[in-house]
Image (cartoon, rainbow, N blue to C red; front, side, top):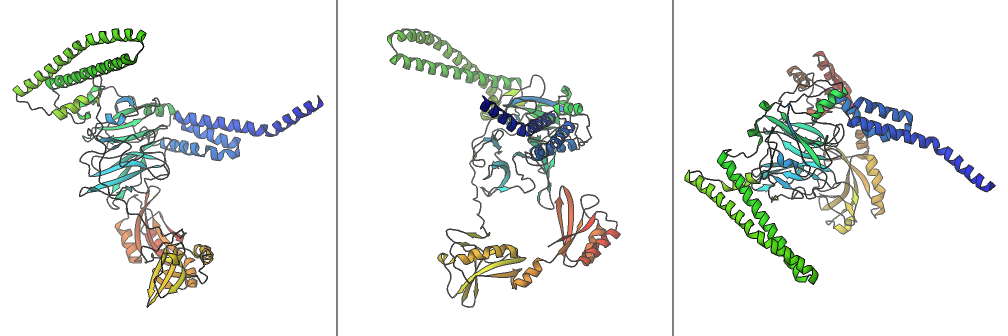
Length: 611
């Protein structure tokens, strides 16, 4: 008995030691759950508050709340920049093929997996948009790490270029999907889970920069386009009337809503501080004003909408439905007959009666089908008598479409999938890897020229004949230089003395006992001591953020050219345009330019230091 009591006391004592941590853990998880719940209800102030309380409760919880805190703080900031679009319509569609209801060219969505998206995995990755006459294709596909990136390929003489990532600004550590280029080619819309956002997929736009011939830093489109949920596939219609996107806010797991908004070329953004107002804005309730709706422009590949044409299309659908019914009926009869041939005697009687009853119905079904076919032929003859030439393929395609919402408001017309893409794509040229490696089989460098700047190498040996792969003992990349009748071999391209020194012993252990470090500056040999001095030398640049956020004034550009012949480079830093003049080896020279710009009234200008 005493042993039992002692055992129980030990258990209680051990539990009491861990009890505070357990309570803290439960409390932290509760705050995190409340934060996420608040975020999904658009209550970003509360979400931030709960995250902060979780950290106050448990200082070790910082890492756990970091992700939700960041997206909640982003949402809080985005509340200051909300658009106020006019909603024309919204309709729920299956997630599986919602994109077919966009007013885009028929037969242009190609199912995945396909040539471009060979995996086609993921909740949203269902198809690639490839119009028949496309000269360039933007699409999403998984990289070797399973992350979806955006790629571009263009057509040249019947060959599509090797797909390339759009650029590093649009490539995040998470997925990007459904890229769509605006009708004027100046804007790229896409959805991302990895860029500055509020959780899930947010919508972004990147504008084409003619100066850099590239897409600029993408901008989150903000509320109510983006939300705490998944928002994707934004487009503007080619007639300039509507903006359309999809979202799973307020939808079941296997469905999405398509929202149709009046196009607003110059949206006015305003702060929305009230959570209820933000929630109402993001609900995107249609205005309910029929005068705002133009269904003709909403339907892709629209055909003549006459009563005769509609009657003809309806009859095509009727004939097809009857043919399908007869086909299914015959298939069921065949199955019954097959079952009858191998059935037991007691079952055969039942099957026989069922087969006879169905066979009596078959002539009536065929009669109905023949009557509908005859009516269809009559309509066709009527068209011919009136001199109307039918485009059978176009009318057939229209008959295949499913139309949703036409009776009440905006018409969503279902397009058809196009055939699997058959593209002649150039194979990407595999770039030679110039990083230092020890491989099962050594490799000689494809190009023996060294890059500009300061470079270290490890010299291996010098001999009177060309080296073989066996001679370099698995090293890569090995460079060959010729001096008179001698061949000199070195390995690696190292940018710092520390890196080359760290690999010197690895090379010597392979048997290159006389291996030594060499240095090069802009392709010219220099001493290692001089290289180390240059490596530690500081350089200075003058950084200017334009006052108008876009470009320098003529006076500023003139002052820069008067004070220096150094390069003037334009770039983007955290979404802001920045110019950099330099580098200067002399700090005083950089400060002279700084003072000259300040004298002109340039406010945001500074000198930065680097090596």
